[in-house]
Image (cartoon, rainbow, N blue to C red; front, side, top):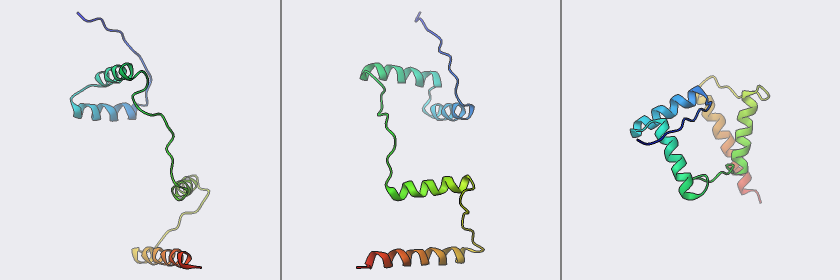
Length: 104
C-alpha cells in the first residue's frame, strides 16, 4: 500500500471552488492536480512555469490605472444617455487621434 502524507493549506473559497470545477472537467481532483504540480516541479527542478510580472505597453498600463482610479472614485467615469451619444464621443476621440497622427 502506498504511503501518503497530508498537506493542509488555506485558500480563498472562491478560488477553491473554481479550481475544483476546472479540474473536474479534466477528470481529476484538486489533490490530483497538486500531486501533478509537485511531480512536475521535481522533474524540472523548480517551479514548472516562469514567475514573472506581466508587462504591458504604456497605453494599456494607463488604461488599467484609469480603471482602478474609476473604481476607487478618484476619477469620474463618462456616462452617456444613449448608444448614439457614446458612438459620437468615440468618433470624436478617433478624429482627434487621427489628426494627431498626421501632424507634421
